[in-house]
Length: 92
Length: 92
Image (cartoon, rainbow over all chains, first blue to last red; front, side, top):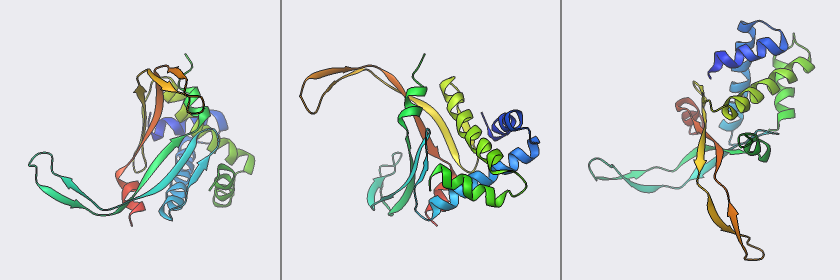
């Protein structure tokens, strides 16, 4: 499933054009991204939380050459699915 | 940011739709991602990231309170991998 398929779902359910649906999805994603950019958590009830976590500097290795390289401290986005989401994908 | 705040922020950006419609759109986006994963699909949103399911084997766990052994069945868990653009944004 890709963005266009989600736009299609929105088009079918909400009755706005596919083009407009695609634009709004883009706006939703950009809004989420700008919140994460600030380091803030995005909590979507029934879905999960997008959390920005800080990683310390550490030493890594190039798995191909075995050469040691420094990995700079960085921030990463992790997703913690909600209980509802976890249950949802396990019902058969 | 919570989902309610996301809907609020969206309805200020998309002024020609009612808040009710905006709410439906936001819900449809997350519901369709959830549904697609539950059906065994994979979601790829360029610039944002991808969602897929990861399998967890069954294991014997322990109730941390009582110490008694409990059987944890095999299950699937939703997994999100941040896309290139999102990774860069949080490190900007």
